[in-house]
Image 1 (cartoon, rainbow, N blue to C red):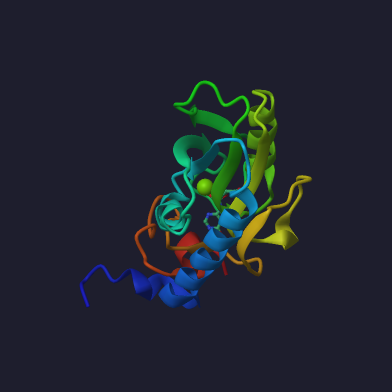
Image 2 (cartoon, rainbow, N blue to C red; image 1 turned 60 degrees about the vertical axis):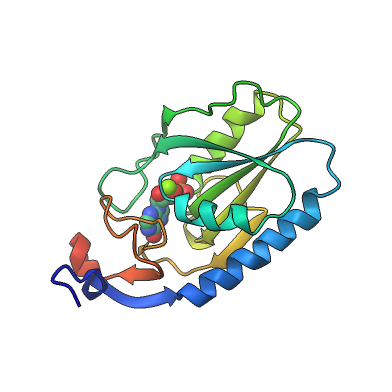
Length: 188
Ligand code: IMP
Ligand code: MG
């Protein structure tokens, strides 16, 4: 154990490395099945930064040709609830997405405000389709009219970190998903 033991801030492990591996492999198969006969190029769009770990594993679980791109938006400050304001920090590198199948890859669907906004924005660029793939889904917290097409796991309303998910930019490098101790973010 090192002196910066991040696991000390975790209340309990929600998804182990093995759970995550199985989830990614299942979703990868579903995606291949659904897109293998499409005539359109498939672009996986990772929503930075939370989805990078998931994206890295997911793209290797997809064995049909695909492209990758990244967008960065911010909807959260250092707190744990959505500000409702979505800011585009980095747009796609690909400037023409007309006629492509876009698959947005997210870490977690919470209020849904971020993805609702992104989906609408991307739809104005005339892609052939836009679907959503999220590692985690917190349906109890949804306020925007949006749902994911591919979900790794549906989880209860708790603040989770690890496998890309952060609290104030920390814990992204934990290899599992865990519930953060409320005392860490000043909760009860
Ligand atoms: P939404 O717009 O409320 O759906 O917010 C989605 C974004 O909020 C995610 O991409 C995460 O960056 C962040 N988020 C929501 N819930 C959590 C959580 O439990 N842990 C870490 N980040 C979260
Ligand atoms: Mg995020």
